Amino acid sequence: MGGKLPVPDLSDDMILRVVSGIRPCREGGLKLQPGKLGSRTVIHNYGHGGCGVTLGWGCAELVADMVKDAAGEKADVTVLGGGVTGLTSALVLAEQGHSVTVVAEHFGEDTTSVVAGALWLPTGIDFPKKKADRARFNDVLRRSAKRFGMLDRGLWGVEELPVYEPADSEEHPEYFESGVMGAPRELTKAEPKPGSIKEGRLFRANFIHTPRFMRTLHEACSKKKVGFIEQRIESLADAKAVEGDVVVNCLAMGSREVFNDQKMYGARGVLVHLEPQELGYIVHDCYKYMFPREDALILGGTFEAGEESPEAPEAIAEEILEHHRAFFGL
Ligand SMILES: Cc1cc2nc3c(=O)[nH]c(=O)nc-3n(C[C@H](O)[C@H](O)[C@H](O)COP(=O)(O)OP(=O)(O)OC[C@H]3O[C@@H](n4cnc5c(N)ncnc54)[C@H](O)[C@@H]3O)c2cc1C
Image 1 (cartoon, rainbow, N blue to C red):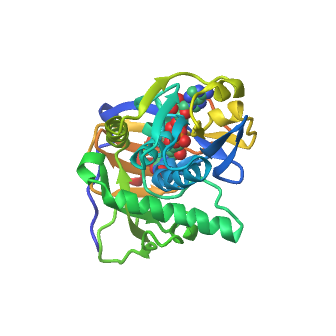
Image 2: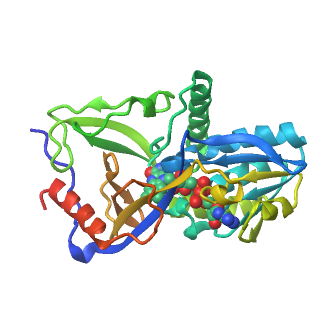
Image 3: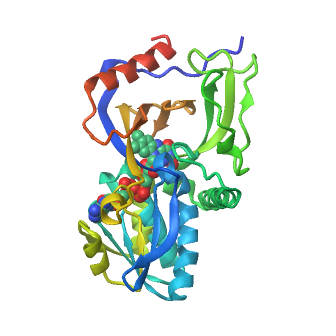
């Protein structure tokens, strides 16, 4: 009963590449707060773990509130970091009338942000335990979702897709507690399902085609006259040397060395990219997921906490492929 959703072609000749990225995780979760950088204010915005694309816009709005508190309506702001966190912060600040420059070692294609699929879901991050912090985190999610909802979907590469989870995959009610998305519902016998799923759950979520999203974000920043400087920040002294009334730190893993945050740790994610395929759905079984991104069918993957080497052993890619082939009975 119920039939099957389209089956992807996972044969060897469809494989494009194996990629990996280091999720910028932080014990205790996100750091989104002001601090001191010499006599100036630095606003920290890092530690987004496995969901920086999801959180970007919401964090950026809170950053803008903090910049206003620290330096008023029209400040010179230097944003450190050119991933999704840095560029969403830069754009929101520029939209609010600040003069913004982004300083980063890498932009666009070379950031972790482009490695992400990305599914809009707050995964791979420590949820705050204290009630007030938790409420703020959920507020960030709601703000972020609102901005995603306002985007021109074609231009930014955002689409809503059905997400299927097998019954035995981990359940995370906290992902849905902000109320942004309806909680997963049980699949009925009658409806079609992907692969070997007989019983499971279904919800709908935004999917962000990150290469297009990051390109558009970069262009939107340029249109708002955001400046870009390619530079590595080696130390706190380098951070102190940048110009601006306020500094916004979106250095992700770089915050460990530059701002000495020893709570930061990387979690490697390995993915296999295949030729793109228009499947129209996502399979989500924790980090063993399948995302139909426009430039590649993405097979996940891993979440290797503490592993920071981008050179993934070949065996991992083999295991990912085997898992998905078995799931689809291929
Ligand atoms: C395999 C994988 C899958 C993922 N899937 C999802 C998903 O489905 N949904 C989701 O929301 N998120 C996902 N993520 C997480 C997401 O990619 C990250 O949370 C997000 O990219 C963090 O953005 P960022 O801008 O903080 O960091 P980055 O993208 O890493 O950007 C950091 C910036 O800081 C710069 N920088 C760092 N150190 C220095 C320095 N010393 N000097 C100068 N510049 C420096 C870098 O050059 C870069 O410009 C995934 C990540 C991985 C690896």
